[in-house]
Length: 130
Image (tube, rainbow, N blue to C red):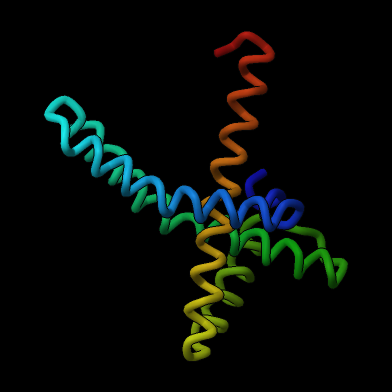
């Protein structure tokens, strides 16, 4: 689902990813200033770095699915992920531009992850499962 949002709502995903990138360290810093918030700050910080890494994975999956759909190939999740990671790795070799592309992929993947989680929470609240 996250990879679908990368394609359908690219700019929204990018914006949310940027907000998460900027606001999470501020939140962690504020939590570190309180003694009670230190354990929560550590937990959020670990999740933050984990999601920064996996944001690229969501973007790579979306890239792979889009390429396979373009050549009318059935989108296998594993094949899409491998193809997307390969494309990102090749693009990362381009000096300066490659780093910018990887950064954008991370932001879009991060934003789509949070959009997917928000949709899931709203869906569960609608079913009164949460």
